[in-house]
Length: 310
Image (tube, rainbow, N blue to C red):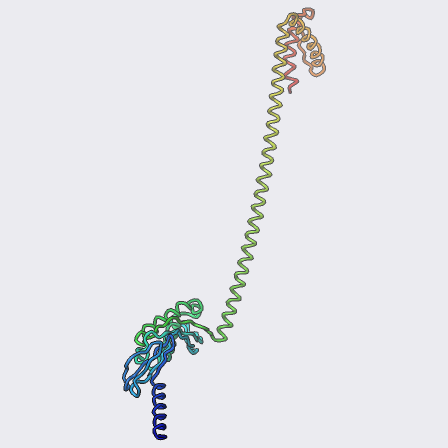
């Protein structure tokens, strides 16, 4: 009886051990490669699985999640023969576990080595100044190169990122000096542009001032001319009205006699002035003839008016 119990206990323990050894739980986003007697048998997805005891074994375990690992820093030579230290990050994902298991020994090492080789080749095709500007282009070329080879490994290269590009100290100093000179150049150009704009603004202000001054002077002269024209028109109008009134009065009864009397008075006055201003004087032959004297006075008055105008 005790022997039977011992045997049953041993048998139960053996069954438990076999179950533990043959039962497999595959986590989410993972795959296990199962080999039977050393040959590929099947790929297990996420879940609980029972293997054939002593025949099946888990040969490889792969995560289907995105992986990232460092690409070690390496020395690269640019097109213009400058040595730089470059490192980066690569992002991979296992797409086919069977190919990843049997297509290559270690896809991580292979991807890292291929990334370094491609990076050296890419850096060697561009100048130092362009390495900082064309990081996106460098990343794209590395991804394309690795992805073509990784298809046979069941691997998908998602992206590659250059972390640091470190030139030698002497080159860094030269670049800093160049950047300092460039900043000073931009500052000088900005200052000269400011002075140029200031000069233009001043000249434009002077020009506007001169235009406004000339416009004011022009308007002043126009106003004066218009004033003089109005004055002349007013004088002419008044003179015309005066002449019209005189003509009306001459045509009125007694107007002609009044005019003759007025002319005679003017004649006497003008005759006296002629005697003072000129040595030559025309005297009528018959002083007693009033009509002749008036006629002579009218003639003398006509002569004196141009003289007075001078």
